[in-house]
Image 1 (tube, rainbow, N blue to C red):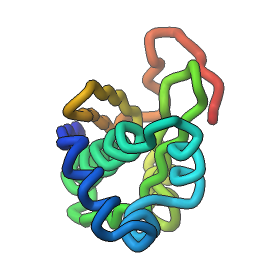
Image 2: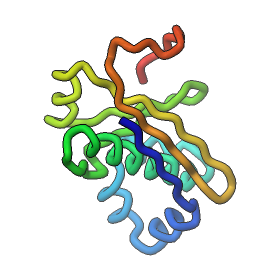
Image 3: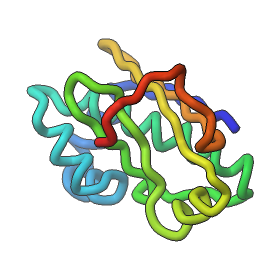
Image 4: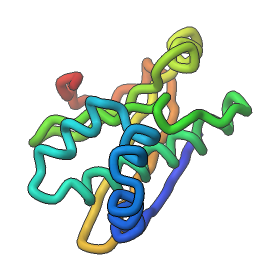
Length: 134
């Protein structure tokens, strides 16, 4: 199943300015917050993670008929490598039991961030490339 989302970076910036830590803690995990704040401007990083979370929510719903909460999805990044997404808790365990995994792609430019998420069988290779798990 497939999900996609695009978000205005300005929208995330405004939420951050208006609600500050309350916004961050409601949407993002500690790991995501720490990672995004390693950048001079954390907004594009936060916006891309928002888009990933929305895309994962859409893909997950198509299979399980349940809407995930933002903090149930963690986007893990390591500079120089593609980001990965993990569904936390019992919903993540449901994926494992069905031998499913989440694959994502995200991008951002000056004004927008976009992400696509797909839930696929674990045994489907990703073009023969083995990326480190982050």
